[in-house]
Every structure is written in structure tokens, then in C-alpha cells.
Amino acid sequence: MRVAVTGATGRMGQAVIGAARERGTETLPVSRASERIEGFDASPASNLAAVLTSESPDALVDFTAPGASVEYAAACAEAGVPLVTGTTGFSEEQVEALRRASDEVPVLYAPNFSRGVSVLDSLVREAAESLPGYDIELTETHHNGKRDAPSGTAERLLETVEEAGETTGRTHGREGIQPREDGEIGVHVRRAGDVRGEHELLFAGNDEVLTLTHRAESRGVFAAGALDAAEWVAGRDAGWYDFGEVLAA
Ligand code: NAD
Image 1 (cartoon, protein in one colour):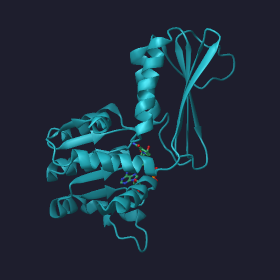
Image 2 (cartoon, rainbow, N blue to C red):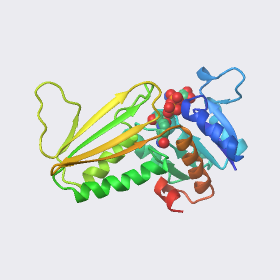
Image 3 (cartoon, rainbow, N blue to C red):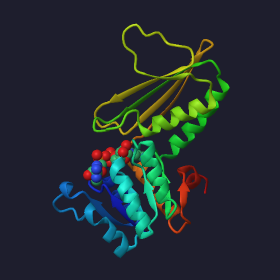
Image 4 (cartoon, rainbow, N blue to C red):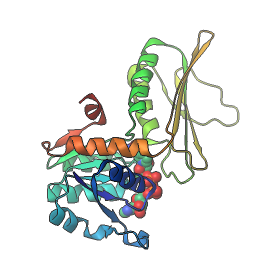
């Protein structure tokens, strides 16, 4: 198994390279020229198309930024290399561009590659369906370098609540005189230190409070999930795949 890794100098890129080394997966690190580190052997991202064509990796694992991921998806489509991306913060147009690439190659996008978050999503669905009328508040915490807010995982959990329950909209933070409206989902974002990722859903009503919390304790959990996804997606037909399919396999 051999994977190209874009964003190789980033937090997740480094975690993917470390996790790949542990499981004996060969990596082809790729990073932006401006972020190349002395002693770290990575191809410049401007050469990605050549790397994909000449080295034919089994998949590209990408944790970068939305614009870069869209560009890399097009390079994968051109070179016939499956893409696994965990980048978050895509606009609808950017998701459309990823989907276009999935006409040519397998594309697996997941805003969270942890098994625990996948279970959390199922539990949140069950709670939202089973506790009608309860107040729902989501709080997420990430490291101080995270750019998008709320996190991609929070967005996914909010969509689950909205599909499963009867909600009227999201309220991002509160300030001044702002009483809670029936049916709203409160959304609270914290950015501090090097927190890997915490998500808490609170359901309150009927003189009781239920909280469902997930905490990632290292980036290794996301790296392992992305590499599992790369192994699963390698050699598949072109198409749009979900991490749930990897977990169900
Ligand atoms: P980071 O800032 O540490 O690293 C980002 C990397 O992407 C760097 O190597 C940087 O050079 C590169 N990059 C950034 N913008 C670029 C651009 N315009 N063109 C080319 N390269 C660019 O960030 P990180 O913590 O590694 O996170 C990266 C992404 O992965 C974020 O979107 C984050 O939310 C997401 N993430 C997803 C999961 C998941 O499980 N899906 C887990 C953690 C992080």
C-alpha cells in the first residue's frame, strides 16, 4: 500500500505519515513549497500531478484547506488516483467540484475520521428522535489554529439533529437580552490551546439533562481512520463514498 499525503507538513499530514509508518504503509509526502521543512523530504504541491502520474499511489490522503483540496481532487481525477479527504470548511460549490471528481475516481470525504464520532452521530439521531421538545445545545472545542467554525463534525451533527428532530434554526452564541426560543439549537464554539477536538450535545427537558460527549485524545485517531479509508477505497470504482461504508465493511 502506498499513499500520497498532501499537507504533509501540517498537523494532520504529520499524523498520517506517522500512522502510516506504524502500519508499514509507504507514503509520498507533498507540501506547499513555502512550507517545506529542512530535512523533511516532500515533493512540492505544484508537482502533484507529476507525482500522481509517475508514482501511481493507491490513494491520495488529503488534510489541507478547501481550495487546495478541490485542486488536488481535479489532479486525482486526471491521474486516476482515488482521493480520501478530511479537509473541512467546504462551500457548496467546492463540494460540487469534489463530486465532479468522483465521476472519474473514487472520492471519500469525511469531516471526521474517528469511529467514536460515527457512533456519536447515531446516538445523537436516536436522542433527537426520542426526546421531542427538549432543548438542544451543541458545544465544540478545538485548538487555537483551527480556521473554520463551527467544525465540520459539528456541522454534520447539527444536520443529524435537524433531520431527526423538529428544530427551528441555529443560534450561534448569545449576547445581551436573548432568551432561548423554542426549537432553536444553540451552537457554541471554543478555540484554545492544542485541543484535538471535543463535541458535546446537550438535551434538556422534563426535569432531566442528557449529554453526549466525544473527545479525541490524539490526531492519531483521525489519521488511522483516513488510512483505513484509503485501504478501503483503493481499487474501487469511481464514485462518492462515506466513512460509514468503511466502518461497516
Ligand atoms: P494545519 O494548518 O496544521 O495543516 C494544513 C496543511 O495544509 C499545511 O501543510 C498547509 O501547508 C496546507 N495548506 C493549507 N492551505 C493550503 C493551500 N491553500 N494550498 C496548499 N496547501 C495548503 O491543519 P490541520 O490541523 O492539519 O487540518 C487540516 C484540515 O483537516 C482542516 O480543514 C481540519 O479541519 C481538517 N481536519 C479533519 C479531520 C477529520 O477527521 N476529517 C481531523 C482533523 C483535522
